[in-house]
Length: 152
Image (cartoon, rainbow, N blue to C red):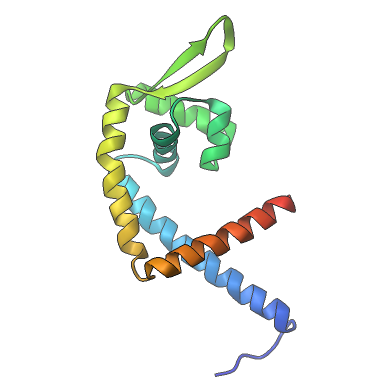
C-alpha cells in the first residue's frame, strides 16, 4: 500500500525514519532497562558503574558527558552508589573542591559480574540484525549523531 505524500518526499522519508528510530530506541531502552533493574540498579546507576568500570576514576562532571545525565542527578546517583558501598569519593590534593569518584572493591566485583551478563543480553536482543548490519547501523547512527551535535 502506497502512503500519501503529506509533506513532500524528503520530509516524509525523514519523518518515517525518525519515527522508526524513536520506536526502536524506546523498545530497546525498555528492554535493557528491565535487564538492568534485574541487577537491582537504575539505568543511571548502571551508567556510572559502566563508565567507571571501562574508563576508570573520573570527576563528577565527566559522568554528565559519558552517561547522558545532569550534574544534579549524577550527584544523587553517586550518593546512592556510595551509600551502597559501590563507589567512593576521593579528594584531590589540597583542592577540596576537586573530587574523583572510583569503584570500590565491591563495585568492581559487581561491575565484572553483571556487565558480561548485560553485554550478552544486548547481544541477544540485537541478533535480529547480522553482524554486518549492526556495524552498518552503528556507522550510520554515529554519522547522524555527530552531525546533529554540530547543530546544538
